[in-house]
Length: 205
Image (cartoon, rainbow, N blue to C red):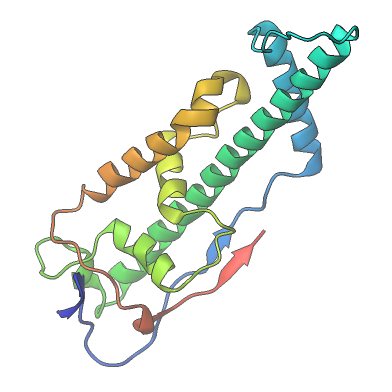
């Protein structure tokens, strides 16, 4: 086992560079879906009476109200779009981890490191750390938050199931807690995978 700072790394025999399956990242929302989401956000604002009370001296009260409604709807679309992007990234990462686990199981040199009865060993969260160590471009999305969002929802939650409080304040806390709980499922101590011993491609679709 190699120790660097406060991190432990599994020590893989030899100097072979191991190739892992490609990470396939799902694309961002398209313009048509954004437009549909905006329509749904407007409908929710009306049904839930979420539009703040307008206090103004302007004679064109309805115009001011519509402006505020549009601003809030756009914020909801932005927050919901971010949720969906995190969910998609998390779904891509979890699928990649599943494929990596299969690759480890088929490789005699790597197989022991995923079994908790062998020390040091790696856990599923070690693959998320590997993404960090390899500086994978995730479009500004933190892999841990993305995985936590995917762990929280089997399917992307529809907008009408998300409260404004969840979208604006609670979703990041939920995702963080979900990831930390999931990461602790592997018996400690969990070691990192040495990034210089692995190679994989990243594809966006």
